[in-house]
Length: 278
Ligand SMILES: Nc1ncnc2c1ncn2[C@@H]1O[C@H](COP(=O)(O)OP(=O)(O)O)[C@@H](O)[C@H]1O
Ligand SMILES: N[C@@H](CCC(=O)OP(=O)(O)O)C(=O)O
Image (tube, helix red, strand yellow):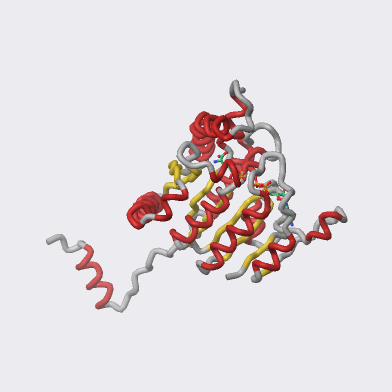
């Protein structure tokens, strides 16, 4: 037997009262990126924004592991194609998502690789969360990816389900995934500094609700009829998503993904954002 095998080494360390340093358990963050963040509110997916996200993940990688939920498949397709039928029909949006998804993943893969980050793609449907076998398969796959330092990038499978492109349910999908993976923190990146007080929006002096635990109070502040140019679900779907994670005892942050370094700034408490306690 090799005298330097693991058992032998442990015995020697024990005998000499030496404790081996245990590898630190990383905190798991699930980050949801809306179309607005990824396009920087333009008609093009922003490579600069994707690089900004990659740089932050790289800076945090010793302490945090990331799972991304990324919208943007429809937005990226609109850059390349103009399908015959009206872009507002659901089936046309589904076709656009199918065209855009590989482009979206290519941009992530190219930009992240430059930073030494590995990526993988996962497409999920709401139905996947209703069956024990598929839930187990999702957890197992994610664990292998994360253990091997891959960053899973999830989007809704827009061919088999239409919730995301109809109702902005990538927020909901993200919350369900956060609960399933029992993450330490759920971050939703959008184009506002979190949820604003309703009155402050009409007065054009937006004021962020910074800490909240009562979801019903938060719902009252949402302007359900208002959403941005590329967005689908508006703030309503984000607050509903936070309701799911709150029940799962996970803290949710709604942050402004348009800002450079938005994740680092939120972690260092250098910007205003909405923190929903569990
Ligand atoms: N109380 C509120 N505070 C901030 N934004 C709100 C509020 N009520 C409604 N909104 C709208 O929600 C939008 C964000 O949701 P959405 O357009 O779906 O973006 P995303 O693409 O990031 O998912 C904001 O740009 C704003 O128009
Ligand atoms: N699966 C769609 C996501 C639609 C969606 O939920 O968009 P958003 O409200 O911007 O998060 C896409 O990739 O375009």
